[in-house]
Length: 160
View (cartoon, rainbow, N blue to C red):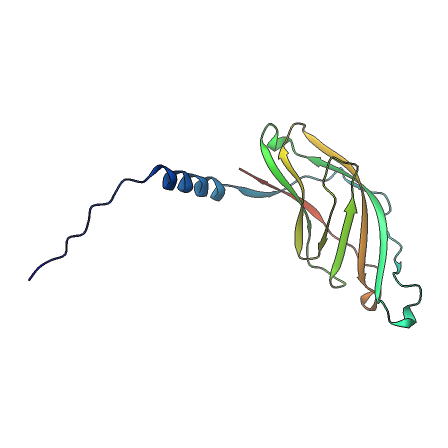
């Protein structure tokens, strides 16, 4: 009866070691809510209007509105580090919400739907407060709009 010998483990090659190190560094990244308490929504009650000129034409059931938002993010805990900042729009009433925004240049413009998040900054954190003026546009199915709804959003940091 012959036995098979189990080969001795071989040392890791440099490429494999580098991949394992990269995976370990990625696993250490953390997502944290950012203090955005100084953010100001200039028009807290957004007037929504039909996206189509004639809602009876059934060409569109979307209602849309816009508001300027002065975003002020306290990023001091991540000062002198790299990070990725996301705008988060949780799933909420009155149903699926689509948000898009333009910026003055500090943050990235973008679009997202409720229940997701979108990247608004990636890079070094060089100041304790990150600030930008965004024009936020919101679109929602008008058939769901039976009263005033609060739209909740927040910012999150992914950092290593």
